[in-house]
Amino acid sequence: MNAPLIELKDVSRRHDSGVLALDGLDLRLARGERVALLGLAGSGKSSLLRLLAGIDRPLAGAVLRQGEPLRGTQADAAFVFSSPALMPWASAAVNVELPLRLQGSAAPAETREQRAREALAAVGLEALADVLPKALDESQRMGVALARAWVVQPALLLLDDWLSQVSPAARPGLRRVLAEAARTTAAPACVLATRDVDEALLHANRVLVLGGRPGRVLDELRLDTAVPREPAWLETPAGQRARKRLLEALSSADATA
Ligand SMILES: Nc1ncnc2c1ncn2[C@@H]1O[C@H](COP(=O)(O)OP(=O)(O)OP(=O)(O)O)[C@@H](O)[C@H]1O
Image 1 (cartoon, rainbow, N blue to C red):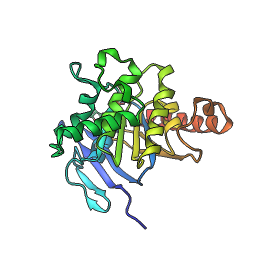
Image 2: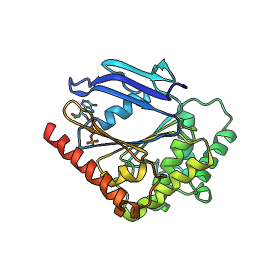
Image 3: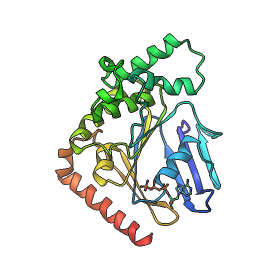
């Protein structure tokens, strides 16, 4: 059997402040897989994403990338946060190019720009490549942030609460943009951290409920239907059963925190 893209074995993570954020955590993540980390504030979701990206190191246990110990950050691991954090003075294309510049890409400027435009095309924003962020609406700005992650051709895409500050009406469109981008190129493994049960259910084939202090996996739910799911799926009997189970797991997390 092929090694998973990333594997965490009995991992714990202590922050420099002394806080033990995670303990005894196991996770195998396959290429192209869509996982949601669901948990209350402080349950360790972001800490786990940072371990997967190689930004932080575990206190104990192992983080393996295709069977080898992960050493430092990975050029093909990309984050999207709840704030798009675009440079206001730079066009969408220049914003999207930024990771290539930061990675010290040896590619000529024209190639970098071409890749930025391709990443914008992947999220349906090619026509806005030369536009400044202030001329974009909120979902276009988040689309540019997604393109900025896409430009590195990620094998691992880490979404840290990415839709929490987008208005509810704009969320289905952005989920579809992500799904469409993943269809047209090699789909990255995609890990979404969220406090929102419905967001987890619409995104993932596997939902891990994190909870307790330190954080650990309290429950794991596998879902077979294709993703992304439309919000109407939440009202089906399968959707309601899944939501009930996750809400119960979250309230037990609350009790153990
Ligand atoms: N850089 C840091 N330095 C010290 N402690 C931290 C740091 N980051 C997180 N923590 C602590 O680690 C624990 C887990 O935090 P983490 O941010 O991973 O949780 P989270 O589930 O992502 O929370 P949220 O939903 O609020 O983003 C918390 O107790 C938090 O205060």
